[in-house]
Length: 211
Image (cartoon, rainbow, N blue to C red):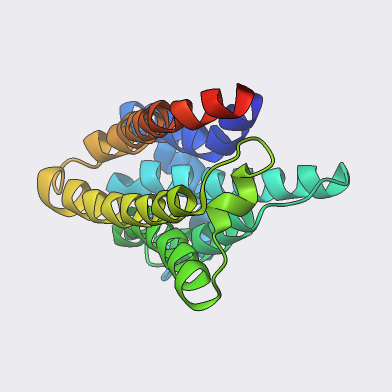
């Protein structure tokens, strides 16, 4: 549970700052002008974009703090976290500089597709199942099941990337607030549901191992 909340830390802060800024636009504009004015092309902060710019900046800082915390504690920083930080720095930085939420809306898709490509390349070309590497210490499965599990996660991440594009640019294209809410609650719920289904499908192998 702690790791789950730790991983969600930047997303939760992004959601909270955006929602507060969207409801208090004068405050958001003042804060964006004061802290982000020098980072924006032309130096002018559009009032309507202030909330998303602030939320993006906070998400960048939160992700950097995650990595810094792990390094200071002498813990291993997962490759997924390094990748997440790289994507938020590029997409978030572009969002702030160009004061355009297009880039931050693409961020989840880029991240999910990067995960999918990494899993696919490792499994197909290097014959290394990354999901097996992560989970094998806790569960023993037949090789065929590990193979299917790896591909199921590849398809899941690919689908999540497509779903984000649908929600960001079709369903909620004129409602950034609704997309921000879906980004936290929708994606988290889908992820949790997928993991539960996976565990249910693998439960018989866990029981066999215990027997």
